[in-house]
Length: 518
Image (tube, rainbow, N blue to C red; front, side, top):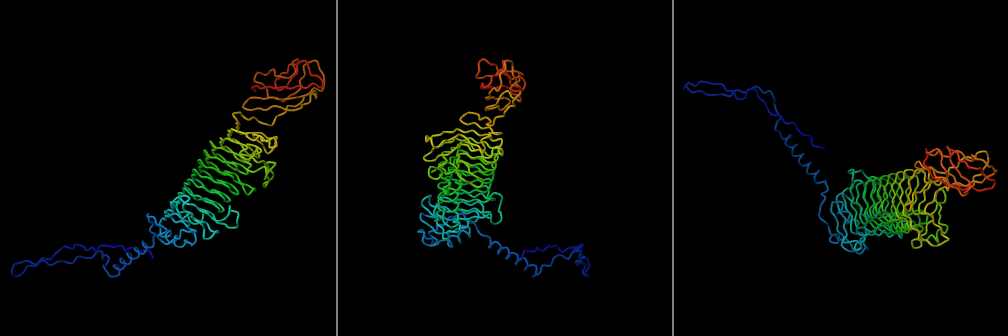
């Protein structure tokens, strides 16, 4: 019960210091005090009021006793009775100290436990590779923290979930920062450093709502997803994932930063899994490497305004000769090529990567796969592509689209220092049925018209023929263009193509031009 304070008031008397003077027979004077009128009784000093004060003091003491005193000193877990051979369950011993606010130090050894973090504590091992935590219950996360936990640290230890490559029926994660509980503060600021996690479902899983995290030198492998990050405003540096059934590193939300991270051999489940997959906005992936993955090295899906800079994408199609000999695989929605960089429904991204094909039995079908080209725009893509695959039965192309009639559209794509142009030709219309267009057309980009066209004469004339119309008008109104026939001048006047001295039946005309349009 909350303490109710008493309003104390003074006793107030009107003219309290007045006296009546009386003359005594002996001539002396005696002063008699005159009781003034009481105009405010004041609060009585009584046992009830004094006891109320005493009870309030006791109640405050009880409330203080119920607050967990978070302590700064480390407890050596060996000294409190924990077994470092991994035989006996240490969960109850360790959890009692964690609940009481103590940070724990794990000397070299193996410890069986499933732990729940509390605010402002640290779990510290003697060193990565020296200390291993294994679960007492494989269906429970080895270490878990919810939204009520903040400013905590886990470092210098290994976690082995005893779930072989994450393929058994157990459901425990290595470290799970969940969105359960009530949010203690806007940025929970977890700090995880020098941790190796193997044989679990997800090595490190971070739910939405866990913000302000610093994750440094996290090594996660032999699991389903190495780092499964579903939140915002976190930093990952020097993290490595290897041999995952699905993604190596999966970033779902926004405003995260990956620096000098590496994903290696993702997608071993042979169903899905990119080395690094980004499905959010305003993320930064800087100086990272994705190498020898079964499927994509980097996959951007529903990703907008991200910066991918200085990254190396080194070999998709791990073991493809055996698993995917035609270099394609089937997913929901159809068959897609094994690509090194895959973009789908993503806009306004800056992508600067080096792509390598043919890395140690890792063969892809294309470097860039722009899936559903029409849904992507304003991407600035700069790629350096190196193809080391010399096997003639494994053709590799720098890029591939979902539809061969599509093109780079509203994206700016530079591959090996060459600006990619639209792949889909626009075709002018034939005039008077005098010619037949055999191939090619024209494209317009940045105010310049590029023509590469072949047509055949269907009639013979000895005078000038207007053969095609609908072309962009040149800035100078009329220009001559190059052709394969030296005895014929071909010009563009207005929006029409004209053959001087006429066309000849069955003659083939090949024309090229590049001019500024009006």
